[in-house]
Each structure stands twice: as structure tokens, then as C-alpha cells.
Image 1 (cartoon, rainbow over the protein chains, first blue to last red):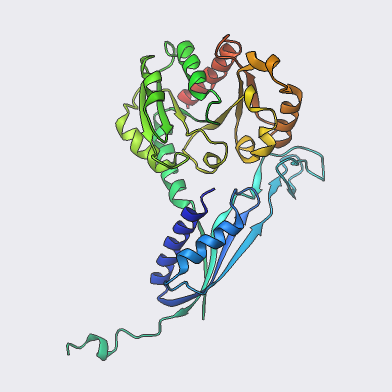
Image 2: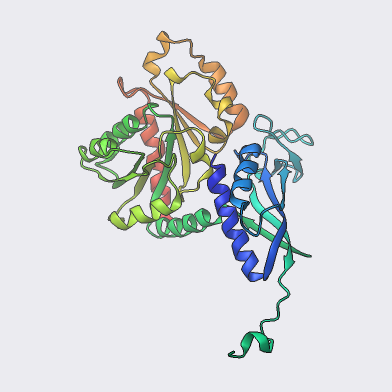
Length: 128
Length: 220
């Protein structure tokens, strides 16, 4: 798919989180990718390194969590693992097209160091 | 060290815009399809056949997506149907933002059937929600019956499969049995139509199917 533009969008979200949470460095980024999502892991990692260079994310650990595809059986209400070519409920044998998981492309979590500068202190507010 | 639980969908921007577009289409009762397939599968040709059969009963509008040229839009325009060409210049799929922009330039009041003909591509368009009611994929005989398993996401996510150029089947080793088997293994609920734009075979049934869907959407 579009690994570079996906990482571009990811970094936009990271930037928002840095500002919102007053971070001065990112040490870990966790991205969840569903089994049915068409992305290539190596290309994602390559793009991530390129985007991270010279930013607060440089050197951060990039974890890609693979999410298994599951479906919901409307016949017997159970959830079960599926693949592209097998969506048969192992409990009752019915076919299910109700995909529950597998299409994810989500920034799960971030780890970072907070900026402890207290901008309310006099040295930052007085006119010198 | 701070841990932040973010849980944000990377494609959320596209999905948010798609929701907005979908709201507009629902409000106006417009049945919308995301029309997909490889370059040369026959998307525009099938669309032209559908226009010939439907344009006197149904108010149609088309958004054409291509990297370059207005060739496809010109073909649709020649049938007297309102059409807008979107040139992506490089992007290999349409996205919701392009559709949001496109509908600013189309008279949507009175439109009952909107066809968004996507860029020819069996990979990327599957992942980008365009606020359609359904994805319709065109596969031609000359592409071979092995394509569904090679591009599973597209076929898994489509509600309709149009097998085009069936008049050429005798000149190829295309196996219709294998195609049905493979497609149903990905998606048991998919509706398959076998058509030929040259002979007209199957076009009537295809149009009847969409007429029903258009009517239902309009009633909602």
C-alpha cells in the first residue's frame, strides 16, 4: 500500500501527542496492523527511520503489533479466527462475513520523556 | 517516562471525511458505488453499457478517477450524463477528500445513482473508504481466473463482481469454475455477473440489480 504516506500520517498524530502531553523525546511507538491490512512491514520500518531522523522520535523503538483477523458468527454468537480463504465457524460450521478484527492500522501507544520545564516560573515570565 | 495510550486510526482523516460525504448521499437518497478493477478490465465500457440502459429511468452522475487525461469523462459526457474527471497526477487511488472536493462541482439534487469510477488498480483502492454503499469490482476474462486469490482484499470487500469480456472466453484458458470457487472462498456473499460489452450479454440483469438497489436507497 502506501507505507511512506502512512508513516507520514502516523508522524502527524505523534506530533499532536507530543504537544498535548508536553514531551521532549519519544522512546517507543507501537503501531497495530491487522492481518487483512495490505502493508509491508519492512517498508514501514524503512519509512519510519527516514521520518524519525532529526526529530524527537529519532532512536525510538518502533513496535509493530500484528492483529489476527477474527469474525463474529451470527449463527452461534462465537468469535473465531479467520483468514482470507476460511471464514467458517469452527463451532457450528456457518460462514461469517462479519469481520471483527483484521483491518487495523492504528497508533496504539507512545512512550516518551516529559518536558519538566515549568514555564510558570519567574525566569520564563519576567521581562529581562 | 510517560506511557500514553493513543489508539488513533491512521486512516481516521479519510474515514471522517467519508462519513461526512456519506451523510450527504444518505440525505439526498443517492445510491453510490465505488467502481473498481484493473486498468483495462472494462470499467468505463461496462459503465457506458449501464448508462445506455438506465439513463432514461434513473438520474445518474459519474466521478471519473485517473492519474491523467479526461478520456474517460469525455466518453461518459457523450452519453449526456453529468460527469466530473478527477486527475490524481500520481496517486493510485481516489480518497474521500477528493470525493468531497468533487461533489462541490456536481449538481447532486435529483441524482439517484452516483458511480465513482476509481483509478485502475486491484490493490490500494480497497483500503480507502469513499462513502460508497458498495464496492463493485470488474474483472475481465483476459486477466485470468487467478486474480481473486492474488488480490484477496479487493474481492473480499466487494459486494458485486462483474466478469467482463466473456465473449472472449473461448480464446483463453480461463476457468469459470475455478473463478467461482476462489471468489466464494474469499466472500460467499458476493454477487457475480457475467457480461460482455460487445455482445450485450448480462447487461440487462446487471442493470436490474442496480435498479432495485437505487429504488431501495431512494425510499429510505
